[in-house]
Image (cartoon, rainbow, N blue to C red; front, top):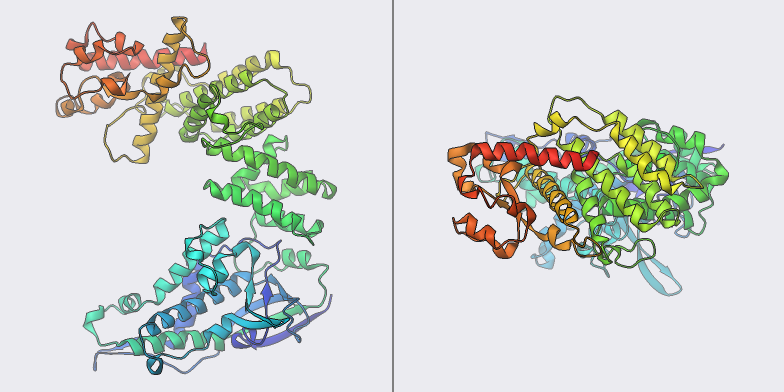
Length: 609
Protein backbone atom coordinates (compact mmCIF):
# COMPACT_ATOMS: atom_id res chain seq x y z
CA UNK A 1 0.00 0.00 0.00
CA UNK A 2 1.57 3.29 -1.11
CA UNK A 3 1.50 6.44 1.04
CA UNK A 4 2.67 10.03 0.57
CA UNK A 5 3.25 12.30 3.53
CA UNK A 6 3.18 16.12 3.64
CA UNK A 7 3.75 18.57 6.47
CA UNK A 8 1.23 21.33 5.81
CA UNK A 9 0.07 24.45 7.55
CA UNK A 10 -3.67 24.26 8.12
CA UNK A 11 -4.03 27.28 5.84
CA UNK A 12 -2.70 25.11 3.00
CA UNK A 13 -5.23 22.41 3.87
CA UNK A 14 -8.07 24.94 3.67
CA UNK A 15 -7.09 26.53 0.37
CA UNK A 16 -7.50 26.32 -3.43
CA UNK A 17 -10.22 23.81 -4.31
CA UNK A 18 -9.34 21.30 -1.61
CA UNK A 19 -12.41 19.40 -0.43
CA UNK A 20 -12.56 16.72 2.24
CA UNK A 21 -15.37 14.17 2.24
CA UNK A 22 -16.17 12.03 5.26
CA UNK A 23 -17.12 8.57 3.88
CA UNK A 24 -20.37 6.94 4.89
CA UNK A 25 -18.63 4.21 6.87
CA UNK A 26 -17.07 6.71 9.30
CA UNK A 27 -18.18 7.03 12.91
CA UNK A 28 -20.58 9.80 13.85
CA UNK A 29 -19.14 13.16 14.85
CA UNK A 30 -18.66 12.60 18.57
CA UNK A 31 -16.20 14.98 20.21
CA UNK A 32 -17.38 16.26 23.58
CA UNK A 33 -16.56 19.23 25.81
CA UNK A 34 -13.32 17.70 27.17
CA UNK A 35 -11.87 17.39 23.66
CA UNK A 36 -12.98 20.94 22.77
CA UNK A 37 -11.46 22.36 25.93
CA UNK A 38 -8.12 20.73 25.12
CA UNK A 39 -8.30 21.95 21.53
CA UNK A 40 -9.15 25.57 22.46
CA UNK A 41 -6.50 25.60 25.18
CA UNK A 42 -3.85 24.51 22.67
CA UNK A 43 -4.75 27.41 20.36
CA UNK A 44 -5.01 29.99 23.16
CA UNK A 45 -1.64 29.00 24.65
CA UNK A 46 0.14 30.39 21.62
CA UNK A 47 -1.67 33.74 21.70
CA UNK A 48 -1.29 34.19 25.49
CA UNK A 49 -4.06 36.54 26.62
CA UNK A 50 -3.19 38.42 29.85
CA UNK A 51 -4.22 41.37 32.03
CA UNK A 52 -1.63 44.10 32.72
CA UNK A 53 -2.55 45.56 36.12
CA UNK A 54 -0.11 48.48 35.76
CA UNK A 55 -2.06 50.04 32.87
CA UNK A 56 -5.38 48.20 33.32
CA UNK A 57 -5.19 46.79 29.78
CA UNK A 58 -5.68 43.44 28.11
CA UNK A 59 -2.61 42.26 26.22
CA UNK A 60 -1.94 39.34 23.92
CA UNK A 61 0.75 38.02 21.63
CA UNK A 62 0.02 38.42 17.89
CA UNK A 63 3.14 36.60 16.71
CA UNK A 64 2.06 33.30 15.21
CA UNK A 65 3.70 30.22 16.68
CA UNK A 66 4.11 26.91 14.90
CA UNK A 67 2.02 24.24 16.57
CA UNK A 68 1.44 20.59 15.65
CA UNK A 69 -2.20 19.44 15.50
CA UNK A 70 -1.76 15.78 14.64
CA UNK A 71 -2.24 13.67 11.54
CA UNK A 72 -4.95 13.28 8.93
CA UNK A 73 -5.20 10.20 6.73
CA UNK A 74 -6.69 10.85 3.28
CA UNK A 75 -7.35 8.95 0.07
CA UNK A 76 -5.90 10.90 -2.87
CA UNK A 77 -2.50 11.77 -4.31
CA UNK A 78 -2.21 15.13 -2.54
CA UNK A 79 -1.28 17.07 -5.65
CA UNK A 80 -4.42 17.75 -7.64
CA UNK A 81 -7.46 19.10 -5.80
CA UNK A 82 -10.53 17.80 -7.58
CA UNK A 83 -14.01 19.11 -6.79
CA UNK A 84 -15.59 16.14 -8.50
CA UNK A 85 -13.50 13.71 -6.48
CA UNK A 86 -12.76 15.15 -3.00
CA UNK A 87 -10.16 13.68 -0.67
CA UNK A 88 -11.74 10.97 1.49
CA UNK A 89 -11.04 11.42 5.19
CA UNK A 90 -10.05 8.04 6.63
CA UNK A 91 -8.81 9.34 9.97
CA UNK A 92 -9.02 12.86 11.34
CA UNK A 93 -12.65 13.79 10.71
CA UNK A 94 -13.10 14.80 14.38
CA UNK A 95 -10.12 17.19 14.13
CA UNK A 96 -11.11 18.54 10.72
CA UNK A 97 -14.69 19.11 11.88
CA UNK A 98 -13.55 20.81 15.09
CA UNK A 99 -11.13 23.04 13.14
CA UNK A 100 -13.98 23.94 10.80
CA UNK A 101 -16.24 24.75 13.77
CA UNK A 102 -13.53 26.87 15.40
CA UNK A 103 -12.93 28.93 12.24
CA UNK A 104 -16.70 29.24 11.71
CA UNK A 105 -17.05 30.64 15.26
CA UNK A 106 -14.25 33.17 14.57
CA UNK A 107 -15.94 34.18 11.32
CA UNK A 108 -19.32 34.46 13.04
CA UNK A 109 -18.01 36.72 15.82
CA UNK A 110 -16.26 39.03 13.35
CA UNK A 111 -19.29 39.12 11.04
CA UNK A 112 -21.53 40.06 13.99
CA UNK A 113 -19.09 42.89 14.83
CA UNK A 114 -19.24 44.09 11.19
CA UNK A 115 -23.04 44.04 10.93
CA UNK A 116 -23.65 47.62 12.08
CA UNK A 117 -20.39 49.07 10.73
CA UNK A 118 -19.88 51.22 7.66
CA UNK A 119 -17.84 49.62 4.91
CA UNK A 120 -14.66 51.50 5.86
CA UNK A 121 -14.97 50.43 9.51
CA UNK A 122 -15.53 46.74 8.90
CA UNK A 123 -12.88 44.32 10.09
CA UNK A 124 -11.48 42.47 7.08
CA UNK A 125 -10.97 38.73 7.25
CA UNK A 126 -10.52 35.81 4.85
CA UNK A 127 -12.24 33.01 6.77
CA UNK A 128 -14.87 32.67 4.05
CA UNK A 129 -12.20 31.34 1.68
CA UNK A 130 -10.93 28.95 4.38
CA UNK A 131 -14.37 27.43 4.88
CA UNK A 132 -15.81 27.36 1.35
CA UNK A 133 -15.00 28.45 -2.21
CA UNK A 134 -16.81 29.34 -5.41
CA UNK A 135 -17.00 26.73 -8.12
CA UNK A 136 -18.21 27.27 -11.67
CA UNK A 137 -19.59 24.46 -13.78
CA UNK A 138 -21.34 24.92 -17.12
CA UNK A 139 -21.73 28.64 -16.45
CA UNK A 140 -23.33 28.12 -13.03
CA UNK A 141 -21.44 29.25 -9.93
CA UNK A 142 -22.06 27.74 -6.50
CA UNK A 143 -20.35 27.68 -3.14
CA UNK A 144 -18.69 24.47 -2.04
CA UNK A 145 -17.83 23.70 1.57
CA UNK A 146 -14.34 22.35 2.11
CA UNK A 147 -15.63 19.76 4.55
CA UNK A 148 -18.36 17.50 3.15
CA UNK A 149 -20.29 15.18 5.44
CA UNK A 150 -23.72 14.04 4.24
CA UNK A 151 -24.63 13.03 7.77
CA UNK A 152 -24.28 16.67 8.91
CA UNK A 153 -26.47 18.20 6.18
CA UNK A 154 -28.14 20.67 6.21
CA UNK A 155 -26.82 21.82 9.62
CA UNK A 156 -23.13 22.16 8.65
CA UNK A 157 -23.37 24.07 5.35
CA UNK A 158 -26.37 26.25 6.11
CA UNK A 159 -26.69 26.65 9.87
CA UNK A 160 -23.01 26.65 10.87
CA UNK A 161 -21.25 27.94 7.73
CA UNK A 162 -24.28 30.03 6.71
CA UNK A 163 -24.12 29.47 2.97
CA UNK A 164 -26.90 31.52 1.40
CA UNK A 165 -30.06 30.02 0.04
CA UNK A 166 -31.32 28.03 3.00
CA UNK A 167 -32.29 28.74 6.57
CA UNK A 168 -31.28 25.73 8.61
CA UNK A 169 -31.80 27.46 11.95
CA UNK A 170 -35.42 26.36 11.70
CA UNK A 171 -34.43 22.79 10.93
CA UNK A 172 -34.45 20.21 13.69
CA UNK A 173 -31.38 18.04 14.04
CA UNK A 174 -32.28 14.67 12.54
CA UNK A 175 -29.50 12.62 14.12
CA UNK A 176 -27.04 12.59 16.99
CA UNK A 177 -24.19 14.01 14.88
CA UNK A 178 -26.22 17.05 13.83
CA UNK A 179 -27.32 17.68 17.39
CA UNK A 180 -23.73 17.33 18.63
CA UNK A 181 -22.54 19.67 15.88
CA UNK A 182 -24.94 22.45 16.86
CA UNK A 183 -24.14 22.09 20.56
CA UNK A 184 -20.41 22.02 19.76
CA UNK A 185 -20.61 25.23 17.74
CA UNK A 186 -22.46 26.99 20.57
CA UNK A 187 -19.99 25.62 23.15
CA UNK A 188 -16.89 26.76 21.23
CA UNK A 189 -18.37 30.17 20.44
CA UNK A 190 -19.29 30.61 24.11
CA UNK A 191 -15.63 30.01 25.04
CA UNK A 192 -14.59 32.81 22.66
CA UNK A 193 -17.01 35.51 23.83
CA UNK A 194 -15.47 38.57 25.48
CA UNK A 195 -17.29 38.06 28.78
CA UNK A 196 -16.02 34.48 29.09
CA UNK A 197 -12.44 35.43 28.21
CA UNK A 198 -12.40 38.20 30.82
CA UNK A 199 -13.87 35.85 33.40
CA UNK A 200 -11.01 33.47 32.67
CA UNK A 201 -8.60 36.27 33.60
CA UNK A 202 -10.47 36.80 36.85
CA UNK A 203 -11.91 40.19 35.92
CA UNK A 204 -15.31 41.62 34.94
CA UNK A 205 -16.09 43.50 31.73
CA UNK A 206 -16.49 46.80 33.54
CA UNK A 207 -13.25 46.38 35.50
CA UNK A 208 -11.01 46.96 32.50
CA UNK A 209 -10.87 48.74 29.20
CA UNK A 210 -10.97 46.21 26.40
CA UNK A 211 -12.61 47.81 23.40
CA UNK A 212 -14.38 45.85 20.70
CA UNK A 213 -11.72 46.28 18.04
CA UNK A 214 -9.01 44.97 20.37
CA UNK A 215 -11.20 42.00 21.26
CA UNK A 216 -11.89 41.27 17.58
CA UNK A 217 -8.18 41.52 16.83
CA UNK A 218 -7.53 38.91 19.51
CA UNK A 219 -10.22 36.62 18.09
CA UNK A 220 -8.70 37.01 14.63
CA UNK A 221 -5.28 36.16 16.09
CA UNK A 222 -6.70 32.87 17.38
CA UNK A 223 -7.96 32.04 13.90
CA UNK A 224 -4.64 32.94 12.30
CA UNK A 225 -2.79 30.88 14.90
CA UNK A 226 -4.86 27.82 14.05
CA UNK A 227 -4.32 28.34 10.33
CA UNK A 228 -0.57 28.63 10.95
CA UNK A 229 -0.49 25.34 12.84
CA UNK A 230 0.91 22.21 11.25
CA UNK A 231 -0.83 18.97 10.41
CA UNK A 232 0.71 15.91 8.79
CA UNK A 233 -1.41 14.77 5.86
CA UNK A 234 -0.90 11.16 4.86
CA UNK A 235 -2.23 10.39 1.39
CA UNK A 236 -3.10 6.87 0.30
CA UNK A 237 -3.27 6.30 -3.42
CA UNK A 238 -5.37 3.17 -3.05
CA UNK A 239 -9.06 3.51 -2.31
CA UNK A 240 -10.04 -0.15 -2.25
CA UNK A 241 -8.80 -0.77 1.31
CA UNK A 242 -9.96 2.48 2.95
CA UNK A 243 -12.23 0.74 5.46
CA UNK A 244 -9.43 -1.52 6.68
CA UNK A 245 -7.09 1.48 6.90
CA UNK A 246 -9.72 3.28 8.92
CA UNK A 247 -10.15 0.42 11.39
CA UNK A 248 -6.40 -0.07 11.84
CA UNK A 249 -5.46 3.61 11.97
CA UNK A 250 -7.69 4.44 14.89
CA UNK A 251 -4.91 5.14 17.35
CA UNK A 252 -5.57 8.73 18.34
CA UNK A 253 -8.58 10.57 19.68
CA UNK A 254 -11.74 8.76 20.78
CA UNK A 255 -11.66 5.02 20.30
CA UNK A 256 -14.13 3.48 17.92
CA UNK A 257 -17.26 2.26 19.65
CA UNK A 258 -18.76 -1.14 18.91
CA UNK A 259 -21.41 0.55 16.78
CA UNK A 260 -18.72 2.44 14.82
CA UNK A 261 -16.96 -0.86 14.17
CA UNK A 262 -20.16 -2.60 13.09
CA UNK A 263 -20.90 0.29 10.73
CA UNK A 264 -17.39 0.23 9.31
CA UNK A 265 -17.47 -3.53 8.77
CA UNK A 266 -20.83 -3.39 6.96
CA UNK A 267 -19.69 -0.58 4.68
CA UNK A 268 -16.41 -2.39 4.05
CA UNK A 269 -18.28 -5.37 2.63
CA UNK A 270 -21.28 -3.77 0.95
CA UNK A 271 -21.03 -1.65 -2.17
CA UNK A 272 -22.48 1.78 -1.36
CA UNK A 273 -22.09 3.29 -4.80
CA UNK A 274 -25.75 4.34 -4.87
CA UNK A 275 -25.97 5.24 -1.15
CA UNK A 276 -28.40 2.39 -0.47
CA UNK A 277 -26.42 1.13 2.53
CA UNK A 278 -26.12 4.68 3.85
CA UNK A 279 -29.86 5.26 3.56
CA UNK A 280 -30.62 2.09 5.52
CA UNK A 281 -28.02 2.79 8.19
CA UNK A 282 -29.06 6.42 8.59
CA UNK A 283 -32.73 5.41 8.79
CA UNK A 284 -31.90 3.08 11.68
CA UNK A 285 -29.74 5.55 13.61
CA UNK A 286 -32.01 8.54 12.91
CA UNK A 287 -35.08 6.63 14.07
CA UNK A 288 -33.40 5.72 17.36
CA UNK A 289 -32.19 9.29 17.77
CA UNK A 290 -35.70 10.69 17.14
CA UNK A 291 -36.97 8.99 20.32
CA UNK A 292 -33.95 10.01 22.42
CA UNK A 293 -32.70 6.45 22.80
CA UNK A 294 -29.17 5.07 22.61
CA UNK A 295 -28.16 3.28 19.40
CA UNK A 296 -26.03 0.77 21.37
CA UNK A 297 -29.09 -0.18 23.43
CA UNK A 298 -31.09 -0.78 20.28
CA UNK A 299 -28.47 -3.09 18.77
CA UNK A 300 -28.17 -4.94 22.07
CA UNK A 301 -31.93 -5.56 22.24
CA UNK A 302 -32.16 -6.29 18.52
CA UNK A 303 -29.39 -8.91 18.48
CA UNK A 304 -30.90 -10.67 21.49
CA UNK A 305 -34.38 -10.45 19.95
CA UNK A 306 -33.27 -12.45 16.91
CA UNK A 307 -31.69 -15.13 19.06
CA UNK A 308 -28.10 -13.89 19.12
CA UNK A 309 -27.00 -13.84 22.74
CA UNK A 310 -24.74 -10.88 23.57
CA UNK A 311 -24.08 -8.16 26.11
CA UNK A 312 -23.48 -4.41 25.85
CA UNK A 313 -19.68 -4.71 25.84
CA UNK A 314 -19.39 -7.34 23.09
CA UNK A 315 -21.69 -6.07 20.35
CA UNK A 316 -19.03 -5.91 17.63
CA UNK A 317 -17.44 -9.20 18.66
CA UNK A 318 -20.84 -10.90 18.58
CA UNK A 319 -21.74 -9.30 15.25
CA UNK A 320 -18.45 -10.42 13.69
CA UNK A 321 -18.79 -13.99 14.95
CA UNK A 322 -22.49 -14.52 14.28
CA UNK A 323 -23.32 -12.52 11.14
CA UNK A 324 -21.67 -13.71 7.92
CA UNK A 325 -20.64 -11.20 5.25
CA UNK A 326 -23.17 -12.60 2.77
CA UNK A 327 -25.86 -11.91 5.39
CA UNK A 328 -25.13 -8.19 5.82
CA UNK A 329 -27.87 -6.98 3.44
CA UNK A 330 -30.49 -9.13 5.15
CA UNK A 331 -29.15 -8.06 8.54
CA UNK A 332 -29.57 -4.38 7.67
CA UNK A 333 -33.05 -4.94 6.23
CA UNK A 334 -34.09 -6.88 9.33
CA UNK A 335 -32.60 -4.20 11.55
CA UNK A 336 -34.49 -1.49 9.63
CA UNK A 337 -37.73 -3.44 10.07
CA UNK A 338 -37.22 -3.92 13.81
CA UNK A 339 -36.27 -0.30 14.47
CA UNK A 340 -39.82 0.68 13.52
CA UNK A 341 -41.09 -1.71 16.19
CA UNK A 342 -38.51 -0.31 18.61
CA UNK A 343 -39.78 3.24 18.11
CA UNK A 344 -43.32 2.18 18.97
CA UNK A 345 -42.20 0.09 21.96
CA UNK A 346 -40.15 2.93 23.43
CA UNK A 347 -42.29 5.90 22.44
CA UNK A 348 -45.81 5.00 21.25
CA UNK A 349 -47.70 7.78 19.49
CA UNK A 350 -51.33 8.26 18.46
CA UNK A 351 -50.44 8.46 14.77
CA UNK A 352 -48.28 5.29 14.73
CA UNK A 353 -49.03 2.81 11.99
CA UNK A 354 -48.49 -0.78 13.08
CA UNK A 355 -49.10 -4.15 11.44
CA UNK A 356 -50.38 -2.37 8.32
CA UNK A 357 -53.01 -0.56 10.42
CA UNK A 358 -53.01 3.23 10.18
CA UNK A 359 -53.34 5.04 13.53
CA UNK A 360 -53.15 1.68 15.24
CA UNK A 361 -53.73 2.95 18.78
CA UNK A 362 -56.99 4.63 17.81
CA UNK A 363 -58.54 1.36 16.64
CA UNK A 364 -60.85 -0.66 18.93
CA UNK A 365 -59.18 -1.29 22.30
CA UNK A 366 -55.62 -0.86 20.97
CA UNK A 367 -55.28 2.24 23.13
CA UNK A 368 -54.68 -0.14 26.07
CA UNK A 369 -51.51 -1.37 24.34
CA UNK A 370 -50.28 2.23 24.24
CA UNK A 371 -51.11 2.73 27.92
CA UNK A 372 -49.18 -0.41 28.84
CA UNK A 373 -46.16 0.61 26.75
CA UNK A 374 -46.13 4.00 28.47
CA UNK A 375 -46.12 2.32 31.88
CA UNK A 376 -43.37 -0.06 30.79
CA UNK A 377 -41.25 2.91 29.77
CA UNK A 378 -41.24 4.31 33.30
CA UNK A 379 -41.17 0.98 35.13
CA UNK A 380 -37.39 0.97 35.47
CA UNK A 381 -36.83 -2.33 33.64
CA UNK A 382 -36.08 -2.11 29.94
CA UNK A 383 -35.00 -5.72 29.28
CA UNK A 384 -38.51 -6.52 28.07
CA UNK A 385 -37.65 -4.67 24.85
CA UNK A 386 -35.68 -7.62 23.46
CA UNK A 387 -38.70 -9.90 23.94
CA UNK A 388 -41.12 -7.30 22.59
CA UNK A 389 -39.10 -6.83 19.40
CA UNK A 390 -39.57 -10.52 18.62
CA UNK A 391 -43.19 -10.40 19.87
CA UNK A 392 -44.01 -7.48 17.55
CA UNK A 393 -42.29 -9.31 14.70
CA UNK A 394 -44.33 -12.46 15.43
CA UNK A 395 -47.51 -10.37 15.39
CA UNK A 396 -46.42 -8.71 12.14
CA UNK A 397 -45.85 -12.15 10.60
CA UNK A 398 -49.30 -13.25 11.84
CA UNK A 399 -47.90 -16.05 14.00
CA UNK A 400 -50.12 -14.90 16.87
CA UNK A 401 -53.56 -13.27 17.04
CA UNK A 402 -54.20 -9.71 18.11
CA UNK A 403 -56.00 -10.72 21.31
CA UNK A 404 -53.07 -12.82 22.48
CA UNK A 405 -50.59 -10.11 21.48
CA UNK A 406 -52.40 -7.64 23.74
CA UNK A 407 -52.76 -10.09 26.62
CA UNK A 408 -49.00 -10.80 26.58
CA UNK A 409 -48.18 -7.09 26.70
CA UNK A 410 -50.63 -6.62 29.57
CA UNK A 411 -49.15 -9.56 31.49
CA UNK A 412 -45.56 -8.35 31.09
CA UNK A 413 -46.61 -4.85 32.15
CA UNK A 414 -48.20 -6.09 35.37
CA UNK A 415 -45.13 -8.10 36.37
CA UNK A 416 -42.80 -5.23 35.49
CA UNK A 417 -44.82 -2.93 37.71
CA UNK A 418 -44.59 -5.42 40.58
CA UNK A 419 -40.79 -5.49 40.30
CA UNK A 420 -40.71 -1.72 39.94
CA UNK A 421 -42.64 -0.97 43.15
CA UNK A 422 -41.13 -3.59 45.47
CA UNK A 423 -39.57 -2.10 48.60
CA UNK A 424 -35.81 -1.55 48.91
CA UNK A 425 -33.71 -4.28 50.47
CA UNK A 426 -35.33 -7.30 48.83
CA UNK A 427 -32.51 -8.01 46.42
CA UNK A 428 -31.97 -7.42 42.72
CA UNK A 429 -33.39 -9.69 40.04
CA UNK A 430 -31.98 -7.79 37.04
CA UNK A 431 -29.88 -10.67 35.71
CA UNK A 432 -32.73 -13.15 36.12
CA UNK A 433 -35.16 -10.78 34.40
CA UNK A 434 -32.75 -10.38 31.50
CA UNK A 435 -32.46 -14.16 31.15
CA UNK A 436 -36.21 -14.77 31.02
CA UNK A 437 -36.74 -12.11 28.35
CA UNK A 438 -34.07 -13.76 26.24
CA UNK A 439 -36.02 -17.02 26.61
CA UNK A 440 -39.23 -15.25 25.59
CA UNK A 441 -37.57 -13.74 22.52
CA UNK A 442 -36.37 -17.18 21.50
CA UNK A 443 -39.88 -18.55 21.99
CA UNK A 444 -41.51 -15.86 19.83
CA UNK A 445 -38.97 -16.57 17.08
CA UNK A 446 -39.99 -20.21 16.69
CA UNK A 447 -41.11 -21.03 13.17
CA UNK A 448 -44.10 -22.95 14.43
CA UNK A 449 -45.36 -21.16 17.50
CA UNK A 450 -47.65 -23.14 19.83
CA UNK A 451 -49.99 -20.32 20.80
CA UNK A 452 -52.15 -22.52 23.00
CA UNK A 453 -49.41 -22.83 25.62
CA UNK A 454 -47.75 -19.46 25.00
CA UNK A 455 -49.38 -17.44 27.80
CA UNK A 456 -48.72 -20.27 30.28
CA UNK A 457 -45.05 -20.33 29.25
CA UNK A 458 -44.71 -16.57 29.70
CA UNK A 459 -46.41 -16.51 33.08
CA UNK A 460 -44.27 -19.41 34.26
CA UNK A 461 -41.15 -17.44 33.30
CA UNK A 462 -42.36 -14.23 34.95
CA UNK A 463 -43.28 -16.10 38.12
CA UNK A 464 -39.61 -16.96 38.60
CA UNK A 465 -38.79 -13.29 39.17
CA UNK A 466 -41.91 -12.12 40.97
CA UNK A 467 -41.21 -10.27 44.22
CA UNK A 468 -42.72 -11.35 47.53
CA UNK A 469 -46.06 -10.02 48.73
CA UNK A 470 -44.29 -8.58 51.77
CA UNK A 471 -41.95 -6.51 49.55
CA UNK A 472 -44.98 -5.08 47.75
CA UNK A 473 -46.97 -4.25 50.89
CA UNK A 474 -43.96 -2.36 52.25
CA UNK A 475 -43.67 -0.28 49.08
CA UNK A 476 -43.39 3.48 49.39
CA UNK A 477 -43.06 3.95 45.64
CA UNK A 478 -46.72 4.64 44.78
CA UNK A 479 -48.01 8.03 45.83
CA UNK A 480 -49.29 11.35 44.53
CA UNK A 481 -48.13 14.62 46.03
CA UNK A 482 -50.61 16.48 43.93
CA UNK A 483 -48.05 19.18 43.15
CA UNK A 484 -48.26 20.98 39.85
CA UNK A 485 -44.47 20.84 39.54
CA UNK A 486 -43.20 17.26 39.92
CA UNK A 487 -39.81 15.69 39.68
CA UNK A 488 -39.18 12.44 37.73
CA UNK A 489 -39.62 10.35 40.89
CA UNK A 490 -42.96 12.00 41.66
CA UNK A 491 -44.24 11.56 38.12
CA UNK A 492 -43.23 7.90 38.06
CA UNK A 493 -44.86 7.27 41.44
CA UNK A 494 -48.08 9.01 40.37
CA UNK A 495 -48.28 7.07 37.08
CA UNK A 496 -47.63 3.74 38.83
CA UNK A 497 -50.25 4.56 41.47
CA UNK A 498 -52.81 5.37 38.81
CA UNK A 499 -51.96 2.20 36.86
CA UNK A 500 -52.61 0.11 39.98
CA UNK A 501 -55.91 1.88 40.68
CA UNK A 502 -57.01 1.47 37.05
CA UNK A 503 -56.16 -2.24 37.18
CA UNK A 504 -58.19 -2.66 40.37
CA UNK A 505 -61.14 -0.74 38.94
CA UNK A 506 -61.19 -2.82 35.74
CA UNK A 507 -61.06 -6.01 37.79
CA UNK A 508 -64.18 -4.89 39.64
CA UNK A 509 -65.92 -4.15 36.35
CA UNK A 510 -65.06 -7.63 35.07
CA UNK A 511 -66.36 -9.24 38.26
CA UNK A 512 -69.67 -7.45 37.63
CA UNK A 513 -69.76 -9.02 34.13
CA UNK A 514 -69.85 -5.62 32.50
CA UNK A 515 -68.71 -4.91 28.95
CA UNK A 516 -64.93 -4.69 28.75
CA UNK A 517 -64.61 -5.00 24.98
CA UNK A 518 -63.52 -2.42 22.43
CA UNK A 519 -63.42 1.10 23.86
CA UNK A 520 -65.77 0.43 26.76
CA UNK A 521 -62.92 0.76 29.28
CA UNK A 522 -61.48 3.97 27.89
CA UNK A 523 -63.27 6.09 30.49
CA UNK A 524 -61.42 4.27 33.32
CA UNK A 525 -58.06 5.46 31.99
CA UNK A 526 -59.44 8.99 31.74
CA UNK A 527 -60.38 9.13 35.43
CA UNK A 528 -58.27 11.37 37.63
CA UNK A 529 -56.65 10.76 41.02
CA UNK A 530 -58.53 11.97 44.08
CA UNK A 531 -57.08 12.31 47.61
CA UNK A 532 -59.59 10.87 50.10
CA UNK A 533 -58.20 12.83 53.04
CA UNK A 534 -57.44 16.24 51.60
CA UNK A 535 -53.80 17.17 51.04
CA UNK A 536 -54.22 20.22 53.25
CA UNK A 537 -54.12 17.76 56.18
CA UNK A 538 -50.45 17.09 55.41
CA UNK A 539 -49.30 19.11 58.40
CA UNK A 540 -51.42 16.92 60.66
CA UNK A 541 -50.93 13.48 59.12
CA UNK A 542 -47.62 13.88 57.26
CA UNK A 543 -46.70 12.21 53.97
CA UNK A 544 -49.23 9.41 54.49
CA UNK A 545 -51.83 11.62 52.76
CA UNK A 546 -49.94 10.94 49.51
CA UNK A 547 -49.93 7.12 49.90
CA UNK A 548 -51.85 4.75 47.66
CA UNK A 549 -54.18 4.05 50.57
CA UNK A 550 -55.39 7.64 50.40
CA UNK A 551 -55.88 7.67 46.63
CA UNK A 552 -58.93 6.79 44.56
CA UNK A 553 -60.14 7.34 41.01
CA UNK A 554 -62.86 9.88 40.34
CA UNK A 555 -64.62 11.35 37.31
CA UNK A 556 -63.35 14.82 36.46
CA UNK A 557 -66.94 16.07 36.41
CA UNK A 558 -67.40 15.05 40.05
CA UNK A 559 -64.31 16.79 41.38
CA UNK A 560 -65.07 19.81 43.53
CA UNK A 561 -63.56 21.93 46.26
CA UNK A 562 -66.29 20.82 48.65
CA UNK A 563 -65.23 19.32 51.97
CA UNK A 564 -68.32 17.11 51.86
CA UNK A 565 -66.62 14.04 50.38
CA UNK A 566 -69.64 11.81 50.97
CA UNK A 567 -71.95 13.94 48.85
CA UNK A 568 -69.33 14.15 46.09
CA UNK A 569 -68.76 10.39 46.10
CA UNK A 570 -72.50 9.63 46.04
CA UNK A 571 -72.60 10.91 42.45
CA UNK A 572 -69.69 8.75 41.27
CA UNK A 573 -70.00 5.48 39.36
CA UNK A 574 -66.44 4.40 40.16
CA UNK A 575 -66.39 1.03 41.95
CA UNK A 576 -63.41 2.01 44.11
CA UNK A 577 -65.47 4.97 45.33
CA UNK A 578 -68.37 2.73 46.27
CA UNK A 579 -66.05 0.83 48.62
CA UNK A 580 -65.52 4.04 50.60
CA UNK A 581 -69.00 5.48 50.93
CA UNK A 582 -69.89 3.86 54.23
CA UNK A 583 -66.86 5.02 56.22
CA UNK A 584 -65.70 8.12 54.39
CA UNK A 585 -66.66 10.44 57.24
CA UNK A 586 -64.39 8.55 59.66
CA UNK A 587 -61.54 7.92 57.24
CA UNK A 588 -58.23 8.59 59.03
CA UNK A 589 -54.58 7.49 59.29
CA UNK A 590 -55.39 3.93 60.35
CA UNK A 591 -57.77 3.53 57.41
CA UNK A 592 -55.16 4.81 54.97
CA UNK A 593 -52.58 2.29 56.21
CA UNK A 594 -55.00 -0.62 56.11
CA UNK A 595 -56.31 0.34 52.67
CA UNK A 596 -52.74 0.76 51.35
CA UNK A 597 -51.90 -2.86 52.28
CA UNK A 598 -55.25 -4.16 51.05
CA UNK A 599 -55.00 -2.51 47.61
CA UNK A 600 -51.42 -3.64 47.05
CA UNK A 601 -52.27 -7.20 48.09
CA UNK A 602 -55.27 -7.21 45.77
CA UNK A 603 -53.12 -5.94 42.90
CA UNK A 604 -50.48 -8.57 43.69
CA UNK A 605 -53.06 -11.35 43.57
CA UNK A 606 -54.51 -10.10 40.27
CA UNK A 607 -51.04 -10.22 38.72
CA UNK A 608 -49.78 -13.51 40.13
CA UNK A 609 -52.92 -15.69 40.23
